[in-house]
Length: 282
Image 1: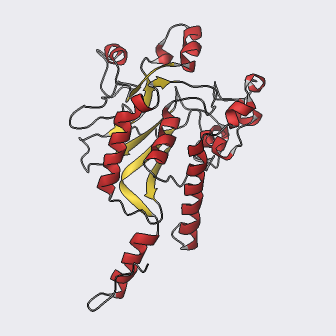
Image 2: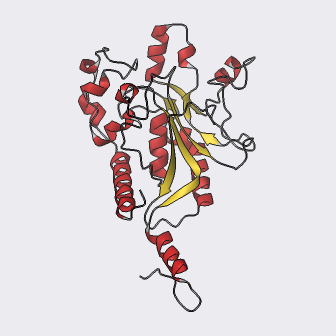
Image 3: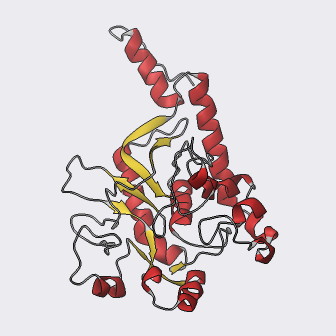
């Protein structure tokens, strides 16, 4: 089928634009994926995007721009209780494996813990599904974000950006019920359910593309999408640095047992990057 718009009064530029809109990836102008990675080789890499060890846990979230600094809308997945705030290290480690989760850190425990704190303080509870005018992640606008990436629509994807944003909202609203409502960190295995797996599933379910998904210099978590998470990256998985030998306790089979959505993400990312490079757009 020929998607070119042609005919009397149609300029060459308009005809080319119509073809491009149908056949090439489109960058979304209002949606940004933001990351504060917790660990990985990038922390020590002087030429990469991450050059210093972050303070506290990392986080990954998606922001929607309303062209108004006072209007916040964003989505991320949190444990319902601030694990780093637990007094017992034993309780912290135990909680990391499986606890109740919540959108935007909006839980009774987190709200109670935030009473009396400044609104600009890190890890304040955000507001969850149903908040007016929009839900927002407590990290919304955080200048510590080490990676801020626009998202793309793939080849032949004709959805409007407004329609995609509605899909993101629906995904976030259904996430707790659809994906079990738990939060966990399991030494960066595919079996965990936390903020970066929330982003992966969002990319998959809403059919979005992050061009840096496979760039370990941007985000070392994502090496495992290519099946590269072995002993080297496992060393710093818990404490963010070398010398912590935990690789022997990790099941490689579990870490590399990728769910179906992982290969789909890799395929979309690779196809889109290749097409943009071919057109000298990247």
